[in-house]
Image (cartoon, rainbow, N blue to C red; front, top):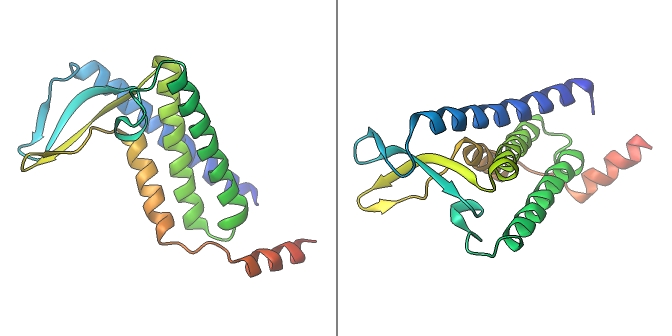
Length: 169
């Protein structure tokens, strides 16, 4: 892969992680935990919350130590899958590689929280007609957007991978 690809990938990853951390820094200074600030009445608030688990609090009830180990292993696995997709499945697709950079940047943003605080800072809070979506953050948004883009991209087929490997030899 070219130097240009790596420059774009690393820059996009870093921008996503920095945007996430900057937004969390601002929200930590501007909001009180659990006190919603109404932005769009009946739809969207800013509410500072802390998530010990993974997405939507998944695994938050695991014992300390076990939870950190499982979340660290899951994060490492997810990052390994992103690297695999960059080199194998989507090595031909610039749009998919940007989506993968968003996923990696979001993962890094949340890992920084886990390492620094032992939990993830969330603050985007959507609700409508009594239904309340769990709070989330920019890192989660980057990850979800990246995944949605990948759902509409076609990975290389086995034949295309074999042909590329033969051509490279």
